Amino acid sequence: MHFPSDLDTFLRTPVAHGATPNKDVFDEVWKIVQECGEEERHFNTLQSVYRGVASSWLLATFGAVGVLLSAHPWMAGGICWLGALGICLLWMLDLHIYHRFLEAAFQQGLDLEEKFHWLPQFRTKSERNTKKHVRRRLALYYLFTALAPAVVGVGLLYENGHYRSALAFCVTWLIVVSTLLALTIKRDR
Image 1 (cartoon, rainbow, N blue to C red):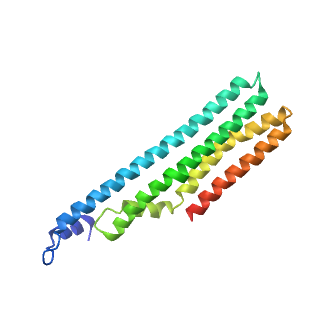
Image 2 (tube, helix red, strand yellow):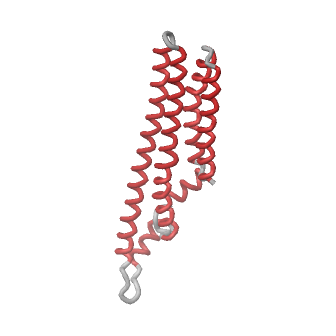
Image 3 (spheres, rainbow, N blue to C red):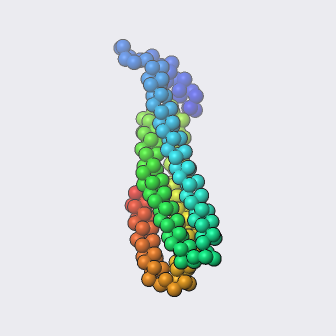
């Protein structure tokens, strides 16, 4: 049976001895499904905004480096460090806070689809197609977005004789990124 005939059958089936009519059940379940969809769209929009801010942050970092490069090359290396750190903070907010809210709303929708087979199976098919690797793919976006200013910053600091600062920057960046990647991979299993 296809979805429309399943739903039609469900809505037309009489219910035993004073129980809630199927039409009322449908209306209540559909309200919950719509609310889950609204929550998913809300958090998806927030995450898209954070990724846009990360891209803008990267552009602003390189713009500031271009301005400072001729006058204060050592300061340009520091700006790169701050840019990479800012992108890592956005990474944390996006994937470790808002993405969890999105996953919670998505999971509620999946549970409803599993319980009420007459619902459209959008979330079930979406989960099957992505194989639950969305967080890892997003983490790669943030990794490479934060890597760009980090590499430039280390190069600028090293080139201008600030070897200890370049080493400290490398170590700090590796710790921050390793922690974020570990949290992302651990959560994705």
